[in-house]
Length: 307
Image (cartoon, rainbow, N blue to C red; front, side, top):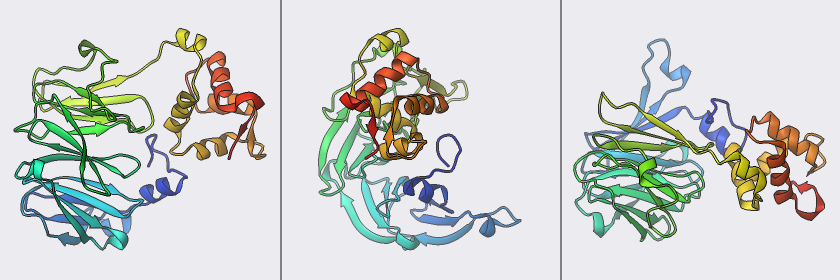
């Protein structure tokens, strides 16, 4: 299901929502593929193990799946990443990645961006690294956090521009993916700071919302939502990039967004169609904001071509 609990309509969303299998990584150094479909679970309520996969020589800390490419990536406690082909649930080993910089270090977390080309690896050496999944070279490093002893996790923003991570000192860190520098657009005093370590962070796949938590009974899960100043937004010009960001926040692909808004099916979006569509999406925007967004996307022709 998508972020709103609804079955998606794009090929990727349909593939994900229709999936009846779960992959787990275990302390016994094995991966397990489970069938969690209603037929397999049955009245007992117990999922069925389809396959037990070996290959790691240490406990497995993180798994990430690229369903589009038919691959899975797993990371263990001695710095090894394994790449698997999961086409038809085969789980054939494709590659073993031994990055010298993290040799012997526990790898806490793997995060893959939407392109499938960038794999973020959080190791217990106070550093997150970005690996190119074609060359398997380190292309960026993100430092500043503390991670030496505990299971700290990170996440990448839906647009792939920002990386966020927890830290053993209780702070939340945000970096610019392209530069590797800590993002300074939000002051440190506005970011969460836990009394104990911040163990996990998560980015909402559709909205400008993040969540973070601490491994403590006394610490609640904190949820933050970014809200632009609506008065300034009404007066400011909205760039084409910002217009695309808003639409892509609701749909995985821009073409899918335009297809849903094109009510008369002529392949073009007029202002009335665009306005009614944005209202139906429950976008918290004024008429002026919607008009500026339409102008940014439409250009001089006052209509948006779906193609």
